[in-house]
Every structure is written in structure tokens, then in C-alpha cells.
Image (tube, rainbow, N blue to C red; front, side, top):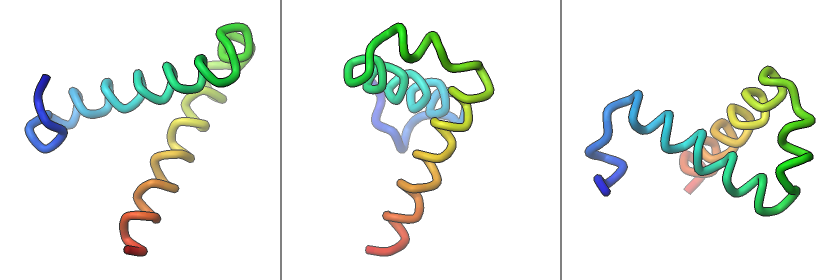
Length: 59
């Protein structure tokens, strides 16, 4: 697997979204994920991305 810094924007986005989805399902379950609309799924992932970027800039 490539390092994050070696990924294209599209590869990173797919990896990040997939990782968040996987972690969410492990914690809350597949039924909970499936109960979210695609818009809600996207908003959840983007909210986490903003939080991570904010945390990185605060270091």
C-alpha cells in the first residue's frame, strides 16, 4: 500500500472515505450506516475531515 503522501487526491479521498465508513460500521453497526442517507454519510465524513485538519493546524 502506498503512503498517504504518495496518493493522488482521488486515491486519498477514496481511502479516507472507506476508512471512515469501516470504522463507523465497526462502532455503530452496518444497519446504522445504512440508515443514513448518502448526504448524511457525506456530511459525517466531511465533518470528521474538518476536525482532523483543525487538530493538525493546532499542533
